[in-house]
Length: 157
Image (cartoon, rainbow, N blue to C red; front, side):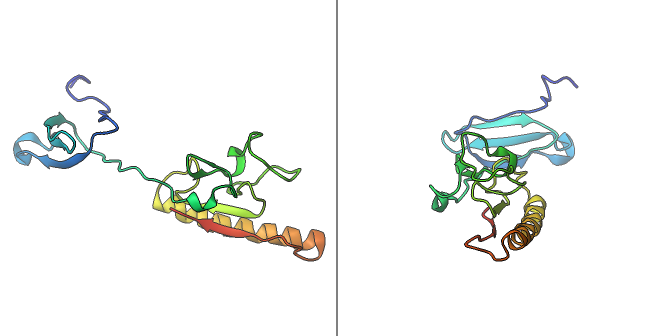
């Protein structure tokens, strides 16, 4: 089968919304055709495909961080994604999952360039907790006290 009959990837326009994907005559077509209906136009089209992946997108709910923690299009910048364009107050580079505020860590889908999968978000959360503990231990051993330093492992998704 050629790519012109079954393209590797078929992308709808950004403004198109899929109202439904219905298989026609599953036994006859072996699940290779889908009927997609665009909500804005109501136009239906058949797409030859072995599978259909619907990416619904997402908007990070991080507006409350505005002006406090550096973000890119609403996604929290962490670790190596913090660049010279964004303020970093320490001589050491930020550790993975650390935000532009030292000792504050981000996890999950709200993080810039995260995988956007539940299992990854759970792993991020567990890692952020460990990093927060390490940060607090380092602060405690270097100053004897936690002088105004706070550490937060936070995720928003």
